[in-house]
Image (spheres, rainbow, N blue to C red):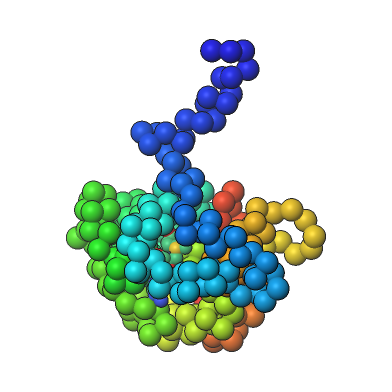
Length: 262
Ligand SMILES: C[S@@+](CC[C@H](N)C(=O)[O-])C[C@H]1O[C@@H](n2cnc3c(N)ncnc32)[C@H](O)[C@@H]1O
C-alpha cells in the first residue's frame, strides 16, 4: 500500500456491499434522476419539477411504472436507514411509544430496526401498493413480522387510524407545501388526542450558510417539485393541519421534529 492510502481505503470500506453499515446502494446513480437534472433550468425558472418535463410524468407515478427503479430507490433508503437508526435512536424517547405507524415507510427497513430494538412496540407499515410487497422479506429477516401490520394505500386518501405515534421519515420534503399540508391533515385525522407525529428529515438552517440539506433541497425540487424546510416553515404547515410543533431535536444526520395535536 502506498503511504497515505490507508485513510482513503478505510473511508471506502462502507462502499463495499459486505460492510455491516454498507452505504453502497446510496451511491448508485439512477438514470432517470440524471436525465431529470438535464432540465434543471426549467426548475430554476418555474419552481416546478424538471423530472416531469423530461419523463412526461411525475416522480412517484414513474416509479410505480418502473419497478426496477422503484426497487433501487427502496434499497437506497434501506441502506441509509442503518445510519439513520444509529443517529436518531439516542435523540428521542422512542421506548414510550406503543404503536408506530410508519407513513410512507418504504420497504420497512427503519420500522424493522425500531421493532427489533423495542420489543413491546407494535408497528404498521404504510406505503403505496407497489412498494409494500418489498417489506415482507425485510420484516421477516429482522424477526419482527408478527408485530407489524403492512397496509398499502396513499396518504392523500388517509392513513391507518388510532395509533399513538405516526412517523414521517424523509417524506414531507418530497412534496409541495399544499401536498404536505394534506398529508399532515390525514395524519391529524387518524391520530387520537394524546397522539404524536414524528417527522425525521433534514431541516434547512436559516440564512446564507452552507448546509448539505440545501443540496438535497435542489435535488428534491428537480425530482418532485418538493422542498426542504426550516423549522419555522414546518411549523406553519403543522398549524395549517391542526397540529403544533412541540419539539425539535437535531442529530448528526436527520432532525427529529415532534408534532402534537394543536
Ligand atoms: C424518500 S422515501 C422515504 C421512505 C422511508 N420513510 C425512509 O425514510 O426510508 C418517500 C416514501 O414515500 C412513499 N410515498 C410517495 N407517495 C406516497 C403516497 N401517495 N402514499 C404513501 N406513500 C407514498 C414512497 O413510496 C417512498 O417510500
